[in-house]
Image 1 (tube, rainbow, N blue to C red):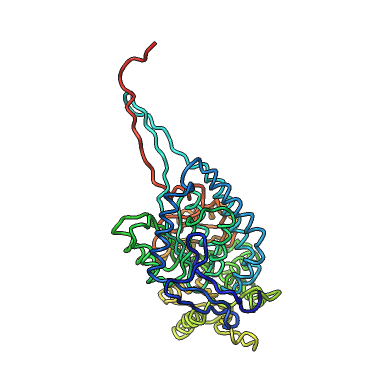
Image 2: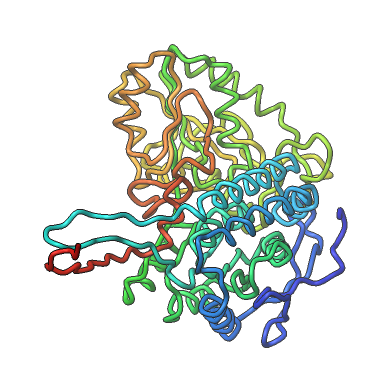
Amino acid sequence: MSAAIDTPFGLFIGGQEVPASDGQKVTLLNPATNKPLAVTSVGGVDDARHALEVAERAFRESSWAGGDGSQRTKALFRLARLLEEQAAAFAELETLNMGKPLRESKGDIDFVVRTLEYMAGLADKIEGETIPIPGARFDYTVREPLGVTVHIAPWNYPLLLAVRSMAPALAAGNAVVLKPASLTPLTALRFARLAHDAGVPDGILNVVVGNGREVGEALISDGRCGSVSFTGSSDVGRRIAELAAPRLIPTILELGGKSPVIVFPDADLERAARAIATGIFQNSGQMCWAGSRLVVEAGVEAPLLEKLKAVAQGLKLGAGVEAGVTMGPLVSKDQMDRVLGFVSEAREGGARIFLGGGRPTAPELQAGNFVEPTVVTDVDPEARMVREEIFGPVLAVHRFEAAEEALRLANRTRYGLFASIWTRDLATAHGVARQLEAGMVTVNEPPMTFPQTPFGGYKESGVGFEQGRDAPLVYTRRKNVIVNLGTGKPKK
């Protein structure tokens, strides 16, 4: 699958691949070469409405939402097994479409398999409760699925972040409509076919590729949409909240980040350097929780940066499918230009480019969307590079003298998704973790998550959470029932 894919991709609605209602198609490019990769259908408002109609009918008429959840458990486990069997093909398709190295795509697919397994295990454990109340009454609650849930996924982890929200919604008994990112829809479309093969009823999982402003807004504004889950930028998240507000539908927004990595002087600098590199150069920095701000104690700044430089210079840039590549291209030329614009602006503002700062010079990389691993020091805390999400392999460095200053720098952002602490002192680790304004904190670890751990942020990093044991409950509504048992004496 290293060349262009001959078979075009359609939308997936009602258990089958279908063309867009107006016949529109687009050619996707391989970000490593900017050569044509695949042709996919592009839906519009009519396709969005059709998908919602089909999903609503499937929710009402299929047995997916009923019973004890065992049908959903079995189907999701089968889906996990099928994906595991085809993991290599899915990983290669993800790499070709998005650009990341193959080893990262393989890790992403493994995470999707584990997510499906975890949510499958919860599908038959969505339970109510009994509540003691006065008098001869019996009170109980039941959990019911919302109906049709809409999921809008980003391009940086195309299948992983789509399934992260779809799997708990499916486990809870909902029908779903997914709008993948227009740049990277290929694995989502293949996954929908796999779900059909695993026994997910027709119409329960639908995929509509299309423009976010057109298709996404049509999906959210429609009365059949019971909830919306979105991962992406804060600006788009605000727009989605506006669209969801008139009908007060449940909304999960996993938005941007400007995550700090705090390194105290007693840290293991070798381990910290490797983890910092992972947190900012993995996926070419195209991560919502990338550790994009290094906050380091002044006395260890110089040795840490030298160790980080050695790690970064050991990275091999190239097409993700090539052997030995450890950092791929950015997803598009527009994204590459945006990232380089941040670096240029910081340089003009007096910052020092400690490492990288431009495009690699190797001739074989010139056609692709490659940016060097970049480290910028002496950055003004008010610079745009520090305030805004770059979504590229660019690390801004700040130094501190005391822990209080480190916390002030770390929390000096409108975001609050992730933070990392590097220290050997447990009291420091726990004390700082409590004061960090972030939904997720690691100690002596790079960005780290699992299907069973909640994922969500503070402040403008979003609303709600994904993953974890309670994730399917987010896609249910709770109903309370009171039964009057009467006041008569029981008959002998």
